[in-house]
Amino acid sequence: MTNKLNIDLTELPLTDKLVYINRVAKVVKGGKRLSFSALVVTGDNNGHVGIGTGKANEVPAAINKASATARKNLIKVPLAGATIPHETIVKFGGAKVLLKPAAPGTGIIAGSSTRAILEASGIKNILTKSLGSSNKINVAKATMLALSQLKGPKEELAKRKPAPDKTTEKPPFAAKAKGGEE
Image (tube, rainbow, N blue to C red; front, top):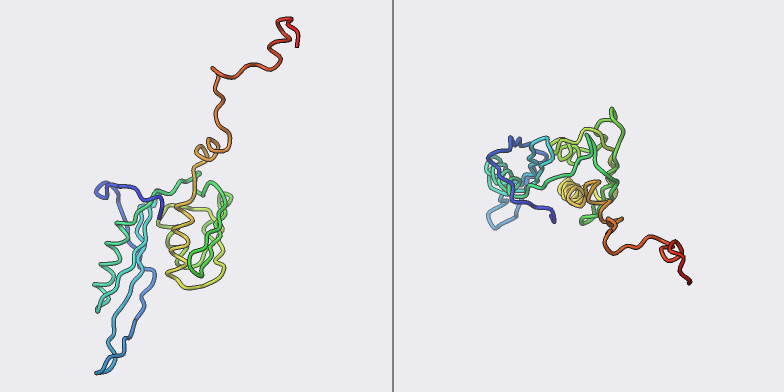
């Protein structure tokens, strides 16, 4: 994630949400060895969100590891009211995610892992579409990548149209106004 910040966790009221648990079986000499992987989303419903995965031999330990990883991977999401500032499409692995801003009252139109991330980040109105793979972990990572690539409206305008520098800029036709020749 390119947008990771050093966010002080003590002042954020973070909530965790378990998105997915996968039972993994490793075949060994004596039979099958089971372990569990968990995908957890954490956020403060006010623009901060993170995801984490954890693996362990028991479900609670996997959830704790995933929660700790999610708290380390928090990012700040730029919000435009209750939606996102602009549309974005991001590909991660085989998963491709489309995020579009929506009008007030639309709600969150999204699949399970994308919905959990958007709810945890505090976005209220958004349209999404998951294209490609339906793997929940890759879809979640693609959604986080898309949210980390969003830019606020002021940043985007500043990048597109630089502020005019008044000291070096001459008004057009300055020579003609003084009566000079071309």
